Image 1: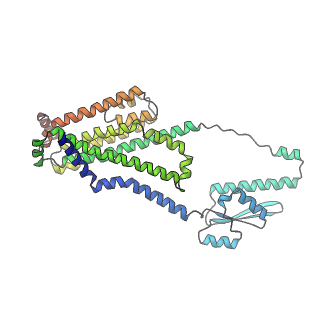
Image 2: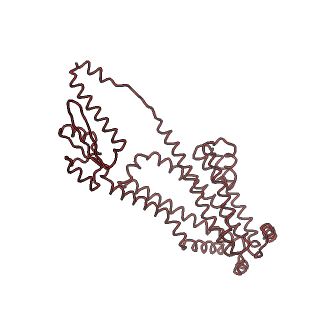
Image 3: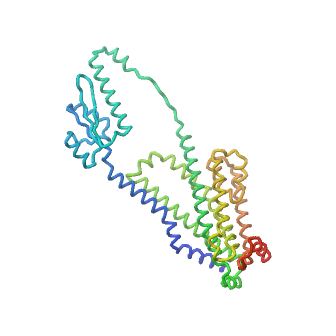
Length: 407
């Protein structure tokens, strides 16, 4: 048992100390920092560029517009000369001239670019409302007539917010889950296959197999890579939680987080669930298969090709999920949610959509765990025969010869 853990820790530390692992870990956090930084700089530099000035010879007209649209107006600009100066320095988007002539209200906008659709709607709404007030005042109508003209149509809308949010959360959770599984599996199947294939045909293997069993050495290699994966997932979980706390308190993002709190909570609930277990078990079984692929190559120079069969299988499982995202009643989905190498994609899809009963999840997990154990045990038994072959024979010859070395 000591030799098993020696191999495990040696493999773990060698991978963790590599620059590639550091780059892999820091990559998402660097991208997050760049995105937030760029957003902050854009926010700081463009914070006032969308504001306009409102200028009018009638202070009451100007003040009533500002009162209704105070977030869009730079209040300290009251004349055209100042407005033009600020426009030239890119600190003002433009200015709006308001006037009333012969009981008719008019507006003229001068700016560096067109008014945004939302602000243009606000301006038109204000003009229409103010003009209506002027018309009513000039018409000298009785209170009863004014009341009759003030009648408005009725419109009611009922939105099932929880249902809409839940459906969106399911879609987001689905894509995050399968992309996360795909990326982690692709990365570590390559690492595992090359870790095994790099030792192919070296004399050190004969010495190692004389001091420990092939099963222990093989499992040590697999466990070492799995510890690296587990470390990465833990770092991402804590880092993601830190990013979430930051987003909740940052002036740049806290309003967005608050508005979408229900959606974010639903997505996190879907991700931080039994789906994580499927992710880990999927990584385990693909890692074992990748180690087997690495042991099957003819020589160390073929290490780069070792992971290709496993990557192709992962790619197949990834793309097969797409047509069934909204077709969970398909018999294909139900069958593949129990099939090893595919269940890590399909059962989380069913769990996210509340389509899998508790017993179905248990059966799927048992099948997946049993497959991992049996596959690891069997490959460990033939591992020595596969690793000690150095001749450039065909795949099937190396495989059948490895079976004859089973111990």
